[in-house]
Image (cartoon, rainbow, N blue to C red; front, side, top):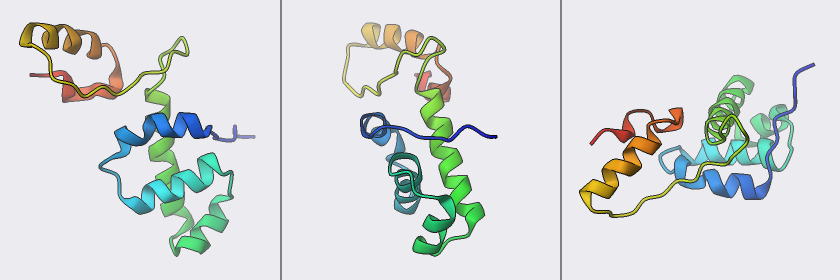
Length: 107
């Protein structure tokens, strides 16, 4: 049997900045299923989407959640600040170690 995908409100809140470009319906679906524990079929009916669409939204957010945690369980945090170039280069080097950052670490 597949493991049930769940997260706490605190874990969700940590992901919100990383989901800024997601459609509102995607985050609404993800929140209902992953945080509130609603069944995907019930959410699909409520929001007027297919079960596959709901499953894809949940999968997208769950994959982001998994990427935002290191292999040793440490939570990553999104930071958006201005730094001198030399310091920013150091931060980019550190950030490049984590797959969630993808191409964002290039200057």
